[in-house]
Length: 115
Image (tube, rainbow, N blue to C red; front, side, top):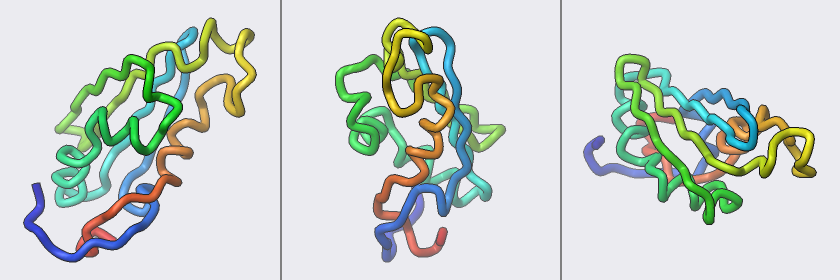
């Protein structure tokens, strides 16, 4: 992890990019850091539990995290967030395409050195 220092409450999207999509009732959310320092912070900060806090709709679902260090990226598979799939769901984003941007909009304490 990064050494301790001052943090600021800010949207995650100031530090990471994201892309998401779906396969049946599951959604994939990929996030990546732009710098090595941001990757170190992201890899230690964005755990499955942290994702559940940022996206409360995932609290009762199975979430699997995959670490892709050579890409400075994490991929989360959220099982069942779309129910039976695109045609059977009435959520704001029935295809899971906006889930990554929803995650980027969420606020958390980010080291000022990364902002």
